[in-house]
Image 1 (cartoon, rainbow, N blue to C red):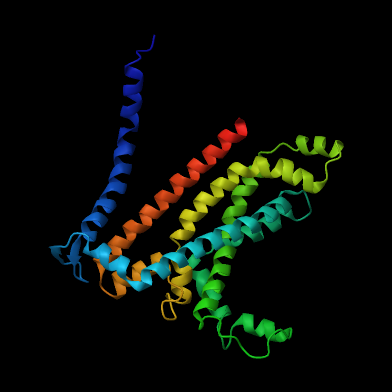
Image 2 (cartoon, rainbow, N blue to C red; image 1 turned 45 degrees about the vertical axis):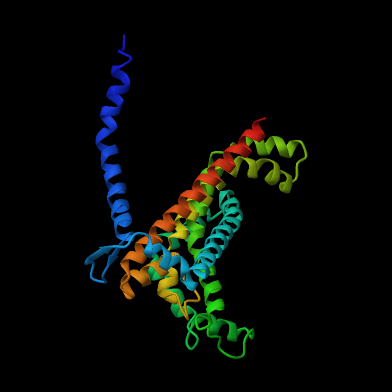
Length: 296
């Protein structure tokens, strides 16, 4: 007979090494950030003096901060929402049995295998106002008469970057949805077809409810990934022109490594961590509440 005390103790003993390592990996950088955020630090990392919450006060009173936070929300919502909306029909098509499906899946997944930095560089060349492929293509079909400086205008550049962000987020999201669709038995669709359900009714009544857990997973993972996504905006515009395309992660980088204000950059890092934690907790509780109502 198994000792009831030894069972849990043995389990905790087995996971203790990996648990301690994980805590160290998380706790060390977090404690360093907290320490730096309450100190005055030179651009070379020299610790000067304890300044309490001055770094947070400087960040929150900076007029750029509110615009950067709002732009970060826009960036995250639009990229994640666009990726999910585009990935659902793509996954449904790739789930069908047709000639060349393997090649089609490979083409959709290929952008995921390319470095995000290289992808951003290619799109920067493509949207160049003088020799970019986008202007050349639009002029060839007669849509534009004069070249457009896509990345010279702040608002236009930001929405161009949102479009690029959606495109690079689609492969990962499609992969999640394909995994969900592959776990759904085709028998229920055959039964629904026999009962006279149309394609739209099958999608709305069967596919979406069964795919909902995977949609939630894709939203949470993509929010965390996109919220902290650095290469696209930094490589294409470096937050410019005139800070018009900065999000929190690029503004953090500029403060810490270009302007030599690591204490304020550490404060922004903690603000970003708090925002992500708040979103994750809120979203998971919201989904749990909806699942409870549906079960009732």
